[in-house]
Length: 120
Image (tube, rainbow, N blue to C red; front, top):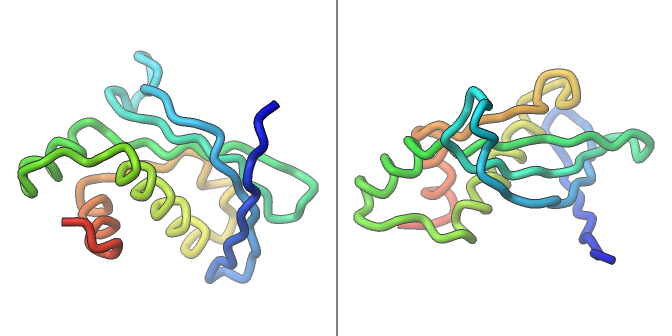
């Protein structure tokens, strides 16, 4: 049995979210975001209904970051970028369940997230 660490984040919209990381996989070949990595989080804002949020890190965004910085992102850095994108959704979206179930990290957001984290 897998024990998941339930974490809490207070979003700027006034909601307190609880979430945990479910896993990471290559985006399905027929997904519009492919080729990409998909990071899946289970999220709740009311502790009653839990729903999945997928964060897609397109290969093009990773390659753009790599060419700008001369190295590839580590697995931990990719996860950190996905988590930062999730937090951004918590802060900016009034209803994550309705409009934030599929989020993408473009090259601008990836650069911003890595810079915020001090990743060069």
